[in-house]
Image (cartoon, rainbow, N blue to C red; front, top):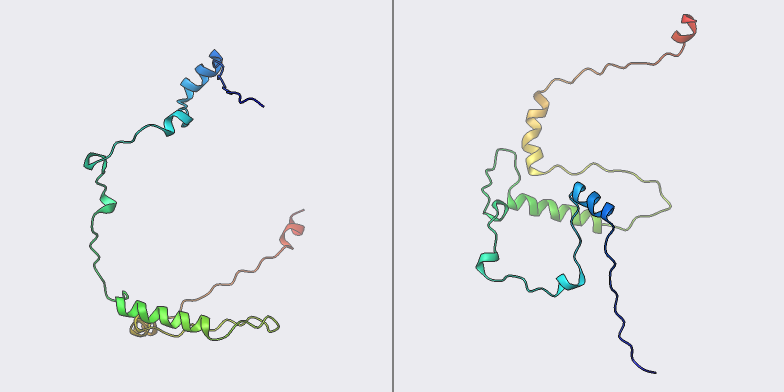
Length: 131
């Protein structure tokens, strides 16, 4: 068998497609030739973006510190490792143990008055009276 060179020549694009693409602002995707282009290198290529700058974090009362976060992670990992789930029993959700920050905020919660809950019931008999 002899080896053959196969080449594809892309036909010219119809004029109505060229006009539609130019009106819509369409840009061609990358081609095979663009993959072999050399990219610029060096310090000029680096972009300075605000997201790359160091960030300043100001802690407010009630925010978790680094140590408290580590304690929380330990508690969560211990809960996951405590035992595997038994699929024959119903699912029971347990309240999470209070953390240091929640304990300090519990005094604030006690001072708040409980909110009134207004229950609204739906009645479908009203429509029958109107007709």
